[in-house]
Image (cartoon, rainbow, N blue to C red):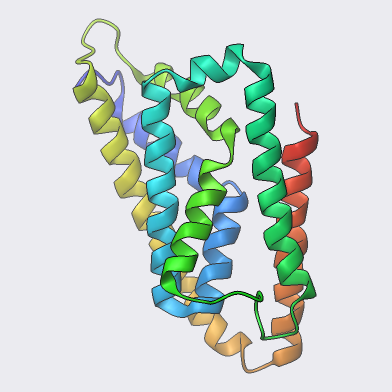
Length: 204
């Protein structure tokens, strides 16, 4: 199908990967709990745009360049780690219910989540390793094959991410009724972001 060796397996594998914990999922939960449905939806769009940019950079050969240029890969990795740690620090030091000391708008959530996605060079390496597993070299149709794969990832990603936002928004309405618990979750999310940043910085 469109040069994809097993489209069903490709879609199923990506769905399973969506459930793996990571900075993107945490950013969605944080945005929806702080900014409601509008903030959560903006975060979803930011994550999807970042994913699509990385995906097409992979197709264009950036992954191969990163694989052969270790210093560039390390710079991008450290930038991503620093950004995650900075966001986490702001959440940890913020007072309960106050949120980060920044202007909270849907546009902010969009940019924040997009940068979290883009500043993770390992995501490019993931696509570089993931795509070849499902490409039929005999029936490959060039850009058409990649476009179908990219659209599939976008649709599945949107359904999953929007589901996360809806569930988080529903739960957040009840959590906000308890300021102490809300503050605890805010700081926990902040420490998790710092942890993701440290993991990215220390990993090879």
